[in-house]
Image 1: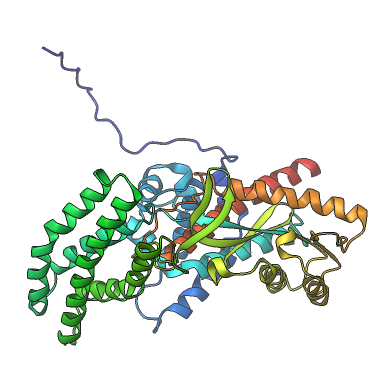
Image 2 (image 1 turned 90 degrees about the vertical axis):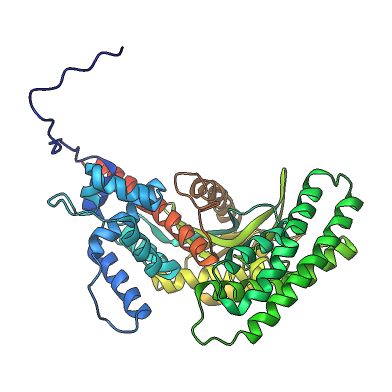
Length: 450
């Protein structure tokens, strides 16, 4: 029989007093960052997003501290809530050292959603401006590259996509109204058949021919279900649409585009152009990288710029996999110009963006040394000395991209369920990197001037 521990004569205190080092990363972040500027940006974003400025104001300082904490620690919303409640440096970062008030995970989530990708990018821009004003970043130098932000999705094969469609339809039909009773009966009849075909494809269809045969059978079953659901949704004329019906309408619209693409693959063996690879994130796409062990990545294409001093600016590339690197070169310079009010003096990019027209365009924008690597026998547009400088700085962009893709920042495969959330997570990762870079640069400057 286990011995009982002797109880203490005095109750254990739940109010602990501990000393926190002034050099702790989160404590220094709370002191060194100009939070008033970040609050102004967050307030501007809220004004653009809300219809009427009614209701309680968000606790901007505390919530921005929570966003910063998640950015440098790559925390979930619940983990952020727990850390802010019980971890002293996190409470200092959020400006909660003199109160017992706590932030719940739902409030942090809603604030992050309110900020969105645009708000996170605006906050990032303020961090970059702080670094420039303190002489820690050099906006006269800009090196760019593109990368893929991979989505956290399964491999997009045809059987998997049709199986996922059936699961989403079945889940929402359970919550739908009586107007879709006919589709519910139809689904009950084919549900077992769909599961059997999916299981057959995964476990027993070993050859390509067998998989195509099973895929075609499943395609016809899914197509019949899809048509019946479409007709029912058209006839079901309720003005007050339930959440289940809204979800069914969204998934039906996606399948309108996806089913012909699935049929094209089953008939020809070739992937259709602009193939949808995820039902609930229809905007993500395949990006051919040609890397060893990873020929294709599934997600969204980003432009990453390294500003002199090692700071980062990133943005989603609109146009996806069909967006030209030549166009990206000019867009990167324009974004830099918009951020800092002037074009960089030195700009570098790889040969994918090279054209004589791009060299001319970059110079017209105000770039003095255009270091876009030439193709073929064309010569560099800069002298030999500047060529070596640009090559050296360009090589550092790859390392920088690798850093923001580390798990600590969460740029790659974020726990997102929409493309807008993916872009927000991407900006948050860049924000976390720049925050840490700012603190390190400030510390190095202090040591140098001491």
